[in-house]
Image (cartoon, rainbow, N blue to C red):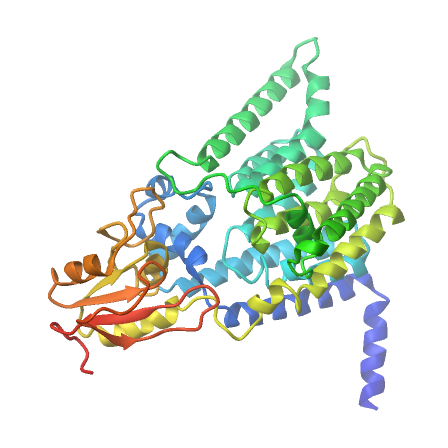
Length: 484
């Protein structure tokens, strides 16, 4: 009897697409809540928190992100939260709130069949990827969906201009997507308004183009590696891997099969472009221009990580949504639906095979939180913590309320990693010499100090087994803090 009631309830919901969309949205967000609670923040997430925490004002946030390789919008979003909490895990509330808005837009407002929207929603990038990690990519997705919706209504409105400016201020991928949107939706109507006779609309269009150009140029300048920065253009790794990873993330990195999978990925994108061209030329321009630039960027050493190549997939699945006011309302062509189903199913499979194996696995991404907890226990009442690498040290610092640590590779105290070329490669001799300068020193080794443990150092903790980061906690035998 109960089974019949549930079946009747399901049939009623299925006959009402709006209710079904709400159910799908609710299930997705429950999954995201579970993933967020299970996920341990790691150094790239905590680096943004550390910068916001160490900054005394929004202007200070801007100054502190000058070597980050991305504009400061995400850190500015986090800054108010760091004024009211020392716990970096509260950053997950911001991620969930932004992700909730993005998913609501995706499920309720996108012009794709509900089954396809659902497939994409439960794929890797929309669950454990951008939604399960507290990084700026979730903000990029929300602003992109808002910007597409605004340009569909009026590409020359103040709202669409503001959203594209904000989108370009998230990261490189947001800049590329914003530029592709401008190329697809703004350029043609702007050129039409710039022709004589000159009037208020002409002046408004000129001002809009100037604002977009200036904002994009500022974001590009912020992203472009500084002479002092460690970031730069990576080594060219070929065109195959970024395309394969973007469209078929479950494929293993086997050199012998990469070309075959890459050709299949190109064929999928070409079929999608042709299908979109029949219903929305603006969407086709957005897809082609965005994917070309993003794939080129990924070809230079950035195709190993899903958060880089995932941007190509985001452009692909959102391209059918881009319209112009001159486009008559039409359904998405089935020729475009088929490659989108391929991409959606590949993303769904990536939950279990490929990037999902690491993200959803029981092994923590980073040992930063465990290391910080052990250090709090060891350093009673207090001690000087020395870390060999500032990138991992910034993550440990954030879990200790923004405590200033001594970064051995920078030879200075700090709370977040300053990614500049002044870093040095420390040695064991330098580490011991530095420890001897303080009354209660503790050394945390992560990646830079390797080899046999020298005499005079004793291990008091070993947070080990992370996917990316590990640590050893050491003390001087001559200045013991914790009894052996």
